[in-house]
Image 1: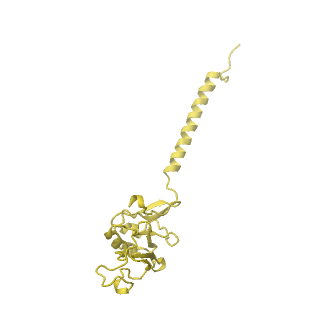
Image 2: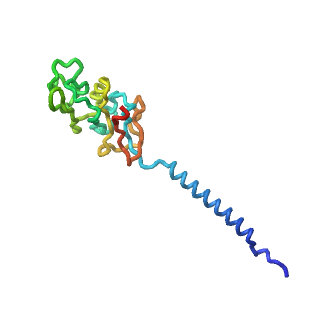
Image 3: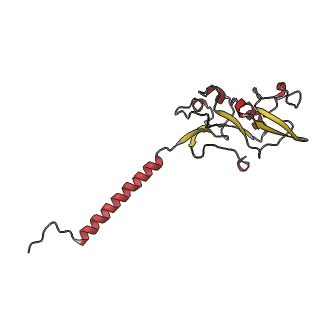
Amino acid sequence: MAESKDIITRRQLLKNGCCGGCLAGLGALGGLLAAKSRPGDTVWQIDPYKCIACGNCETYCVLEESAVKCVQVYELCGYCDYCPGFHEPGATALDTGAENELCPTGAIKRKFVEEPYFDYTIDEPLCIGCAKCVKGCAAFGNGSLFLQVRHDRCLNCNECSIAAACPSGAFKRVPADKPYLLKNVENA
């Protein structure tokens, strides 16, 4: 009796099955790597540790009112009577007089707590992202005031004009599910 060439032996079946399984595994691995390397949903944000408070956020945003706002980490704040983020350098008095305030729009509110402590809060609708308070706060050393992009305002442009104008490279894309780069006490 002559053997037919269409008959597959066990050895051929196992060999073909292993080769097919390896190829399928390599294809799945390649697909997984391609999916991971594809940029997901990202948004623009400012790295507060790289920001030099240059003032470009106020002037380069495509919106009439910049999407960049000052935020404060209260755990880092000293609640001082003299706040270099609130008071103009060389202020004649440590009060809330406009001539003594660093913020050009009065976005930082000062409230007495107890001697010698004051509470400083940001009125975000008044904040224009000029970074004057950030620069003053960083000069003192605690850095509790810093800039962040508010995503309820940001258009998430692919070519952000602030990112292009940022001299320190602090503007970068971050995952949309973790859109804020906040300072914390451990890293300060």
